[in-house]
Length: 166
Image (cartoon, rainbow, N blue to C red):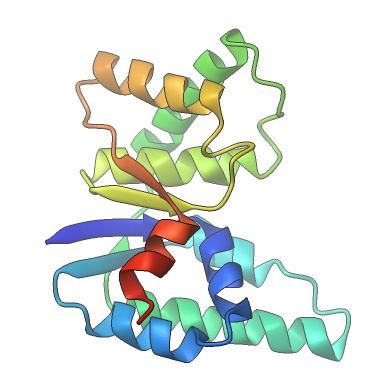
């Protein structure tokens, strides 16, 4: 059984697919593939501005999709996860990483810390700049070795589509 978590951008990318409903249904029905929810991801979706009718509709569609895909599989946040994410960030900065903590990198590192802490198998992301950046990947591996944690595998959005598209 694969235990996975999606970066926030995965939900937005799925929503744009012509066959989004079919892909979503296949993900939900796949018994050997469990997608976990995590509060910082849902919060990032909730933070989409509700300025226009279109943005309100998109926000609501994304929240509904997130809730259906994750179902009742939810991982709790903790100070240990936050501290692990900050360790990733400090090492990332030592490696020359350029993004500040209070950008989207905070949530990215929290997602990876959560996946590592709970022993998830895969993190899916379409973010090559921060979550899947070279310095970030080195930071996860280095810190997880020091903390005696298994680093999850990282797969891209296209890998998810290949798996669930007919």
